[in-house]
Length: 543
Image (cartoon, rainbow, N blue to C red; front, side, top):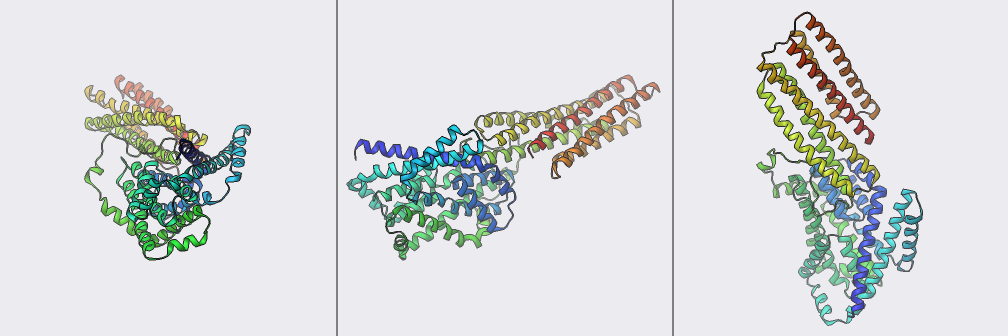
């Protein structure tokens, strides 16, 4: 094998992988926002789950990306473990579309695809058309790379050392291990299957040996999801166990079938002169049959995963840490499907922080009413957690915005960033209110029954406006109008209570010190309403 052949092989591999990435990114940009909507509407119906998983994976051309998305959604609580089973099964079917595309003999017109796509990206200003151009260009580049690899591998047919190596792949165990290892390294079953097809097209490897490598590739693709699950919840880790079990069971079943039946010869007879198509057909057959076989046992797979990874006491412990917003290990921030995962995790984390701020607002009023220093201390501790979350989430957002290219996703992330600042300010006002408890106790300030009742009403209306904020299930305009009405009510209450307090001062019911504290509290109360409305407006803008 000459140096030019090696360079041709490397160049072809580079074009092949780049073309696949470019096509996937174009598809992600064109349809990525709809993927999350599809998954959100998913029910427990297993057939719908398989169909959605297959459809999404066929679109983004990566079962790894789909599985990583599922790991993220399970981790954030958006999807339960049993729903994830059907998505994973469908993803394994959807990933076979890449092999079928490669099997199409369109190498002659591949440059035309690439030219048309690049022309659209370069000269057309419409964003949607540019995404379509990326898809076409990626497809063309992929096929050009495939052709280069196939031509570069032709001399390998006469290389004794390589022939000896390939011959060993006829041993099922060696073939499966080789396929799993290679796919784990490049983290893409679609790419590794494409390379296997290129070897077959060059006549280097036949289907009898290639099938075992192919089965191993299905196991190797699980490594991406395994890496993604590091640092996530127990259920998210169980999702990767299900993915592994699916492919291992399928590999065992098909290895036995290929060893004792003429399945390989049968698949070869479908396309006797198309080695790439033979591999693509076997890949499709493997995943469809395995899905049909395990479809009735999906809930059993989930139960088995729960037994393999049981709940641990330490998983339930609360610490000062991010709960939902986890880095998806093994996947670049610019990777396919990462944006949908990130936004869902970000929303969960922001709402968790908001719930802490809500609790602090309620407790701060209670601490003041009861003159309870213990409650005040709890508010201060919780405020430290709120500050921690504000810092950590802000850092995460700043990193993510560097990679985010989808305009809609960028707007959503920015909206949550703006909401974050308002939540932090609500926490500060809650600490102010609880801090008045200490001043009140130290100076033995007494408030009239009328003032106490007004403070209780402030606490109640704050609870009402937070209740609406945390449940944005109404139609957006209606939801926002209700929060706006409550915010206006807070403003009106502030004006009214100031007037009533001045009257109490004139009557000598309240002292000067009591007046100062009460006036400060009314300012905090009003600002809390303003910040809640700001948060609602940010959320409404991206709903």
